[in-house]
Length: 272
Image 1 (tube, rainbow, N blue to C red):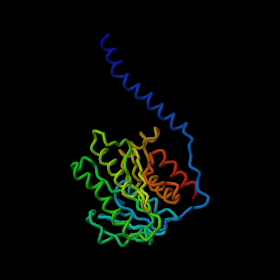
Image 2 (image 1 turned 60 degrees about the vertical axis):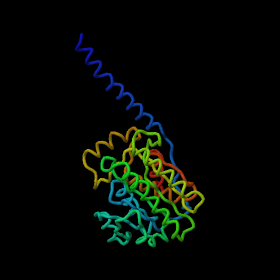
Image 3 (image 1 turned 180 degrees about the vertical axis):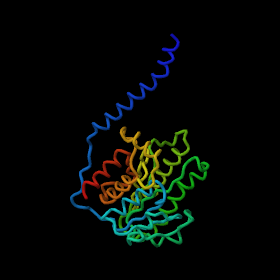
Image 4 (image 1 turned 180 degrees about the horizontal axis):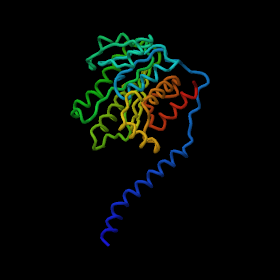
């Protein structure tokens, strides 16, 4: 009697998890919401800039912008050069600038006078730093930049695209969740009433580009994707380009979840 009872105790959570997983898959399959591809572009972001292009999300954003026929020039601000950056430099599409101090942009800010949109993907794992340092990287770095950018921009309408995270709250017990929502609020509040719009992207798991992914990351992506809890890094880049192209359709403070990121990525691909 004890052995069957033990099996039941052990198997019940697995069965329940399997059922919840299948329900999630079914809900994703039944979700037929789509974004209609643009027939006429409201505006074209000829020049964009990417911060964090050497990271997981940033590499996907860089790949998407390099492939986009809508973008003529990409400023990449980085500490480290990657093969994809070198490829973009060789093509003439990337203007690469090495930069070390992300609290001081005085040496590079003039590059941004004609930039239409900035795609911000700088980030670090919570396991790598303490809370204070995490806050400096995820909040102070972008705040210092948008403050400097707004002062030099010659454009009438600019947008700042910030990769945040899903399930964030100021009341969360997780440090990263508190910092990310504080950063969102600070950036959106700063842009209020100005010519800048801040758009926040809230992905779940981010799948790296095929060049960067290892087996474990691929397995995680294919586990989470069927239940709508994963997005490829390139899809984030495609969504950012599509959102930028749609201009005033996205007001300051707009937030895109994983599902929305995928739908706007699909709209981008449907237009090409």
